[in-house]
Image 1 (cartoon, rainbow, N blue to C red):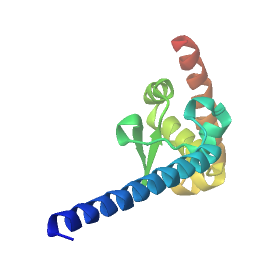
Image 2: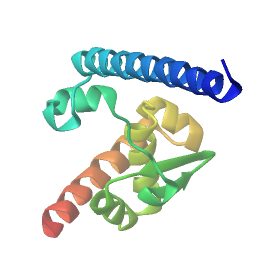
Image 3: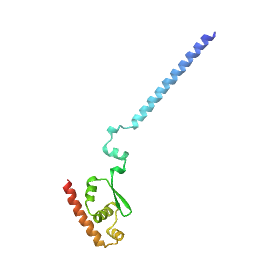
Image 4: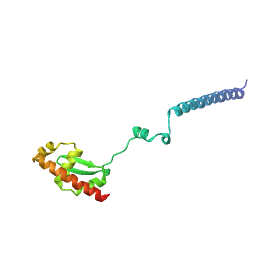
Length: 139
């Protein structure tokens, strides 16, 4: 057997081996795609509630309007509400922001500002009335 025929046989054997490897790899990838397609769902097929469960939203500081109240930075995402809050007096705005965005009671706010509980209640109730009229005007 001469060298050229031996090399030819080795090439044929190598090509056959490579064809077997390629066929097995293709079969393996096809099985993998089939298994994956059984588990995966397209985004367009998901219901809105499922999208909300698995999704997330990015929050950026430019999406909020910030208010400084004492040592707190309170961010309001609703632009109409933020504009209306700016039109309130500082005392009314501060009481409303602390009450509804920091979940403080009237008594806690009164202690922070060194005023009576009834003063905080008046500021809050008058501020809410004014806020309600301002928001109605905007709509």
